[in-house]
Length: 162
Image (cartoon, helix red, strand yellow):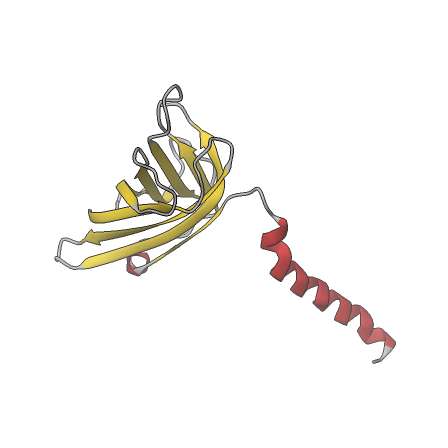
């Protein structure tokens, strides 16, 4: 190998290692994924995932909300998806009802009517602890066809009082 090619090879190796190992090195943050047939009709892009306990903080956790947003959750931020999970009968690894799956956009156009949805958590639920899970939702359009949205999420469960 020529001496001038070595820096290029090292740079490529470092870039490849960053791409492959980057998600592992970033432990502690939040991540997620959205996909499904509804994403061909609605914008499912986001860059932030927030997982929040939206139950009464003085009571056991009964409701967890997962927000897929383009920034910190506040009154005005758009949300590619909001998934509200009823965890009052929580069993790790078992599907639980999702009571609401919606989109919040400045255009005020939301998802169609929710037909059915579930959330499944693969970890225990403890405020401040890392949680991970997945959800699936089916919507019925005005034309009577079904559209699906699937996703997964991982990150710290934040406390958010009601």
